[in-house]
Length: 461
Image (cartoon, rainbow, N blue to C red; front, side):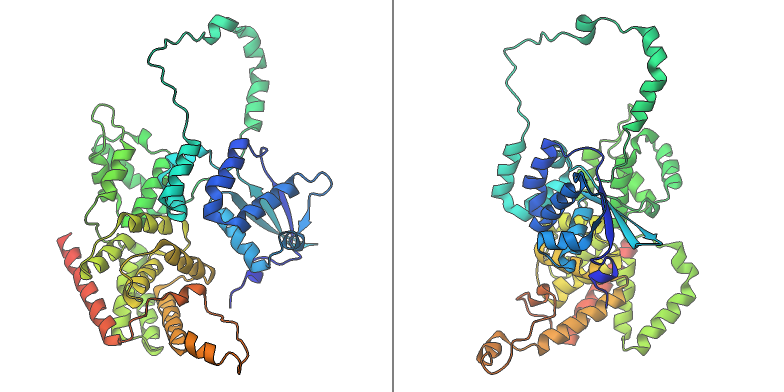
């Protein structure tokens, strides 16, 4: 079974780098804004790496020294490290050294400035979901930019030219090559933004469609492309759907898109279309046939296989909406944000995220996707490298079986004196108090309704 030792070992050597010293704003952001999200161990690890970076006598360290300094084990270290990676605070590089074996380079990233943190809706939601509304409002007030009342004032600030005069153009030209080299030296790599796979979208095709709708290509900078990629992953939008949505938010005067209006429009969508089929799936039809035959041989029913197909062909938001409809409920704003964050940050494929949704809402009979519960499951499944829906289904069934066989708290209490205490090996999130659906016929009926709904929806679109 996979463990932390497969990724890093205590005797592995690492180095630490950071392009610039940690700023005061970055430090405040770490303590007050990032820490509630990443946890104390991850925060301590960041400062531990920062201390290594500032060490004047050593530049290579063994992981065992960091484990001892923080008084944590290897699994906790790796979990904390991944918390930093996921929030864009740490970039990790590895190489094989002929003498020392596997070596790591940890590059500390500057935390997002508090002003940029609150301007980013994803960061803000993560903080709100962690600390609650009352504390969130306190933090907003703490970092809110000061805006004095200038209504009775007239600005009389002097301009640069008024104070310093004109630059010596000839001297500037003579020094231009040296200044340009210095400028290049200060261009440092950074990775403190969320990363998404842009290959999800055929950009040439999207640009061609956008041009027909008089949407300027200047809109498509890296940040906007990242946002479109998220929409494609989360909602299953293809290039045509994305352009249709952008058309509603574009200015006819200059072809520029109001990105905030576009985001609001997308989040208010009552229905979303089925995820675009990938051509590679058609090319691998024989492989898919062999795959499903193997599943049949290992105990998967035809209903299970149909459910696997549904999991891998449906966008997570569409899948969540379908379950909510069958339960005569609705998707809350918090659930939309939670799913957006999950698709954007976790390494789980959409099909496995759908299994997770199905597990929480159908198997566990919850009526709502609770953030802490879902994130604990997603973290556990990420560490177990769940890459296919059938793998996730088998894992869920094993958990349900083990949970049923686990003695109740009452019986454990009555046998406490007569039996040795056994450390529970199941993840904590299995102990969620909501009981699982015990009747397979009930699950099969819900699954059938779900598939019927998705087929009707596909026909409407």
